[in-house]
Length: 116
Image: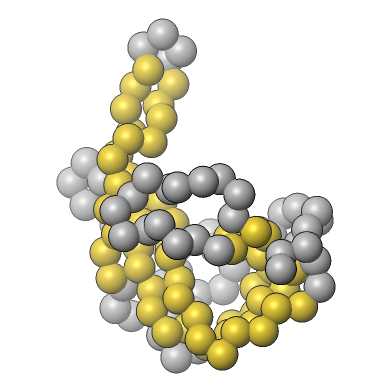
């Protein structure tokens, strides 16, 4: 959202481009049923999803340095219910850094693409 999305909140009708989640278990307790993810930069398998925002959760992660590669990789994660508008600029919570939103929609309709 920071580069190409619009803020939203519970009760909003949304229309997003999405792709099927194919990354396996996200490894965060409570986040084990991911169906789609927001994608606004690709064009393979893109669908348009319409729905009303029912709940918003903020996904936070910690990162661990792999000294052999000198790279950080996601380590621990947690979700926190969001009250108010989601705009992509969430504060860190201690060592946990904001990573994404997990959004539950109702009255969902999906058009085009290879999602279904």
